[in-house]
Length: 319
Image (cartoon, rainbow, N blue to C red):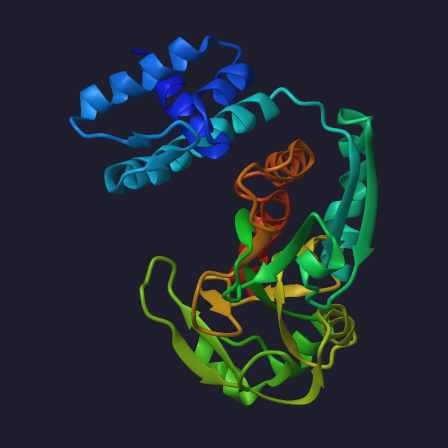
């Protein structure tokens, strides 16, 4: 017996109310549908249907089998759709939400290559630091940075999120470089307004526990680029994401500090750069293409960390 064919014939017979209608829909003889149902009953050892001249009625066992058969057939159809979509063309309109600073530096410069790879794709890109409701806004995917809030969205990690302490050469000459994390208590900190407390967190690479150091400072801002500007101007030490710092470190406008430690603005879940999208049984080819392209383009480790690793290490040894 072709068990899937038998299950399908049984389900359609129940849905349509007769073997003859199910046979017409399935393109088989009525006797074939009847034989399928009989084979299922023989295999299961129970009656699935009470047959009358006018209607089919499910038995208690039939109701149980019907519910499970429906789920199995839905999963089979989903497996077919998901597999077939792997060969589907990447086309249509892709709506993307991206944080402003990260988007300008690490998404927009690569969109020409992305479009060249998928010429039938059109893009609608919104740069915003507001966390939008993807389902209500109609967006297909968003890039989000940090720890993910609890939601029903599906997330894929695009790259890690690392932070680095930096200051201008002028500030370091004036205030002196901190030698250990505890020295930061005596320095002017540039605080990110969205962090939960006036504290930074550190640990040795590979250590499990974070240690906390309170930070004082006369400038607080809710935008990383604003803190970057303040650090360039010598206003204090900033703890900024590495994806923001490459050019400034390379050009000598900022000096990395305390590079022998890992840094964070808050304890808690993993902070990373994520691609998030609404939950669907089958991920559309255009969303899958966006995720795969930027995972590969960012690299492991991400190219911005590789760009500054040597410079940060060298500067840290002299700081």
